[in-house]
Image 1 (cartoon, rainbow, N blue to C red):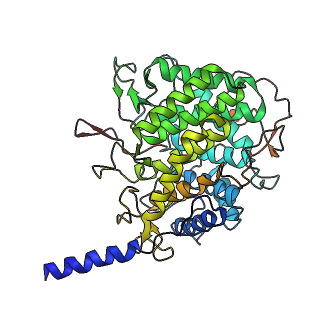
Image 2 (image 1 turned 45 degrees about the horizontal axis):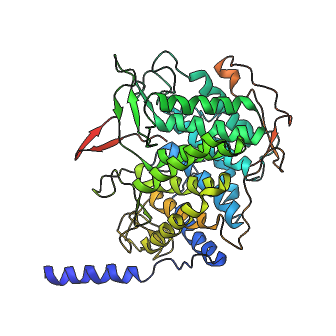
Length: 461
């Protein structure tokens, strides 16, 4: 009987693998069709638009930040495919979670959210501005102003009393993780600052981006080889001298993209070009296996938690964005994104009995090196695959994908350089924004950080 059941199970898996997403790389219509199918499966996880639920929230076990990351993904989905199906729900979600003070600190999250949680929502708003996503009604918070509010609040939290600067992971002292300064929180600050600098032309934002990157390097969280470590403790006498050396794909990606934006902002400076090259080389060496993306710290030992199962999608996003800001990277990045997209499409062949409500045969697994569906499903897995597939449209010959706009190239989002300051107190005065704050269009924290070092797992939170 065991042998018979085993054979039946094997046949079921083989049957699933024959229904993978149909994807012809380089064919715009095929890529958009595949992305549409995957996006449908992703948005079936969302319950915030149901009666009695909270707009913008994902159900358990997903944390608040991942919803922000998902809606940032859906903004890019619209920009790349032209599919408006999810625009209304995306707008509703972001505006609701902006909160009463229009700074992504809603009352239902404030006591537990960290700097990186807030940052992923702010990066979604920044993407909306950069892509000219339809603007909200004039009496609602505006995309650019939302990103500026978070930037201003970050600046007031810059902690020079320990480690010579940097943001702490947590915002409030009573939360576990307040004594930890991590790369993703500072990466959100860096990424937003760089993009605001490009978007507005305001040199203050660029100065902050330089400051954040220099700090990250000075304390050793970005190494001389351009590896990006997870973070460092400020407890006791540690003062950022003890690093958690684990490398996550989203940390590498957020600094790579921010550095590419700074390369663009500075007109192609040699120093930022060198950083982009170094970060890209380290990323390619660390997070790709035969050109297919892997979450190297946890994927091979099946220890990725719910948060970590979504990281690869952000790396795909930021690598594609890097090619737009620093075109010299395209020839190195494009083959990696195409190979990963092909692997992701093959992994989107599942029809699990539970945990997925999309089109049968289109549930996306987590591991893209398996040649098929690995049985793992969820928001992260589906969002990863959507990103891997749709970002191949960036730079694809014959496909018109607009470069993120700025205030001087068609951006329409209304800004407010003083946003967020009403609740955080005074900030160093920002230089006047020459476009009268009208800027255009245009990304975590993991509750449990697993450090797979020397075969051991260390739970930080």
